[in-house]
Length: 142
Image 1 (cartoon, helix red, strand yellow):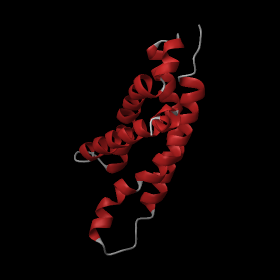
Image 2 (tube, helix red, strand yellow):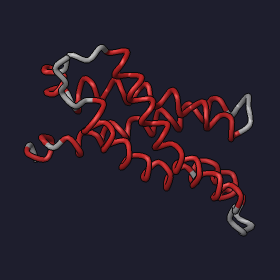
Image 3 (tube, helix red, strand yellow):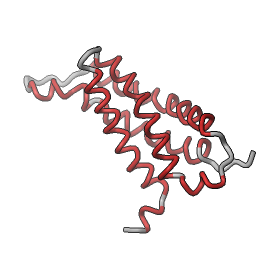
Image 4 (cartoon, helix red, strand yellow):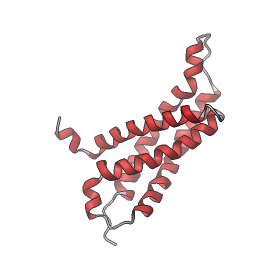
């Protein structure tokens, strides 16, 4: 079990899971006051910033020791990569929101805005890992 924690992708996935909870919690709170689509967009920024910090101190901690990149630059790069990964994430969400389940099940209909997040988040995670591993947290000696 210890060896699995050595892999950056596994740690990245754990951070992503925490980020998903931050994303979902933010969306739930924001959607009390604003429309779900706007709440979804705003929650993304909260979660992306949270994920950058956790990836910096947990996932890519070893790379950080050799990295001379300023934290602000790294955060901006992470947000930039997250925006690119957010395009398919948001696209999946919009497609699923425009095709709600055709069921009389009220619970499913009420949960749909939150369940519709899952496929896009999975696609976004894969893209974010590539950006993070090979660009954002790549050890650079400036």
